[in-house]
Amino acid sequence: MSIDRFAVAGATGRLGRHVVDVLTERGHQVVPMSRATGVDIITGDGLAEALTGVEAIIDVASWHASEKEAATEFFRTSARNLHEYGQKAGVAQIAMASIIGVDKAIAGFVAAKKVHEELLLSGPLPVRILRAAQFHEFVGQLLDWQQGDVAYIPALPTQLVACRTVAEELVDLATDPGAPAQPAPGTPIPEIAGPRKETMAEAAQLLGARRGIKVAARLDAGPMRLYGYISTKEELFDLMVDEVHAEILPEEQPGDWREVLRIRAHRTRQATLRHEWLADLLGGRPTLGPNALAVTEATLAALDDLADLDTVLRAVETVSAYFTGAIRREIANLRAERATGLSKRDWQRASGPHVRRMLATGRFPALAKAVHDGTEVDAEASFATGLDWVLDAVAAKLARPPA
Image (cartoon, rainbow, N blue to C red; front, side):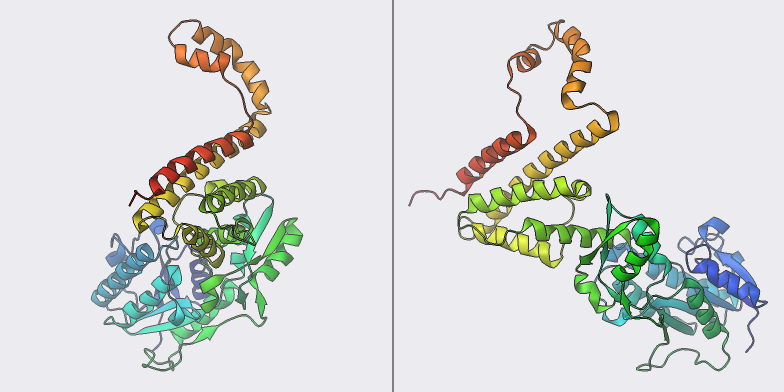
C-alpha cells in the first residue's frame, strides 16, 4: 500500500523536525503535530482535525523528564489517543521511534519507553517500531548542561547515530510496503546505531576540545549500562552527584558513630567547596548510584543497634539536614561575594550606616546586642560548632534508657 499523507507526533522535537524534512523531501504530505502547531496528543485538542485524511502516523513525541511514573503516564495517554483518534480517522498504521535495549530497562525514562512500546503494540492499529541508539546531537546538550568549569559525562558505551539518519530509517520503515504490519511476538525489532563503538565521554571530549570545555570522563553509569542510554538532565545530574560521593566516602571508617557522621559532614562540605554546583543538588531525593549507596550504608552501619531503626533514621536525617543547610548558606555567601564584588567585611562596612540607624530606634535590642557583643567566627569554625551541637542532641536521643 502506498502512503501519501502522514501525521508526525512530536514534529517540532529533536527527531521530529528531521522526520518532517525527510517526508517532505520525498514528496509526502505532512501534518506536523505538536502543541506549537495547535495539536495536543495528551488532551486531544486539535487531534481529530489534524488526523483528517491522514493515512499513517509517525510517533516521535517524547517526555521531558526522567521520572518514570510521569513519563509512563504521558506515553500511556498519547498511545491511547493516537489509537483512538487514528482509528476514527481511518489511519492505517503507526510507526514509532524507540530505544535500543529498552526491553532490559528497569527504571527511569527508558522503562517508561518500554511501556510505551507495549501500549502501542496492544492497540487496534498495526504498529511498526524502530529502536535507535543515543543521538549524536545529545552530546552537545550534555556539554550545555555542565555545572561549573568541568562537564561531567558518563563513560557510557554507545554507538552514536545522527538524528537525520534515524529519521531516514524510520521513514523507510513507515513507507516500506513489504515490512510486516507489526512485529510478531519473539521476532527482532529493527534497530539503528552508528558504526563506531565508543563511550559518551569520549565523544564529549572531542566536542569539548573544540568548545574549550574540560570533560571529566569517569562517571559510572551504574544500572544505565544495561541499555546504554541517558535521556535527561536529571539522569546526568544523578551521575554527577554519585561521582562526588566517591570523594565523600572515606577509605577507612572509624568505629565511633559520631566520628562517622562528623567525617561525612565535613567531607560533604569540602566536596561542595570544590564543586559548588553540588550545593544546588543536595537535599533532594537520594541518589541511588553505587557511591551514594556506599555512603548511606556506612552511615547506617555506624549507628546499627544503638537505637530502634526509626530513631536511627531520624538521627541521620537530622544531621544531614544541618550540614546541607549550613553548606548551602556558605555557598550562597560565596556566590554573593562574586556577584557583588564585596567581601563579607566590605558588605558589612557598606551596610553599617543603615544597620546603625535601625538599631538606634531601640526596636531591635536583641539584635543590637548580637551586633555589638557577638563574636564573629569563620565559616569552618561555625560549621564545626553547629555540627557538634547537633551531634550532642542526637547522642541524647540515642542514649539507651537504664535497665
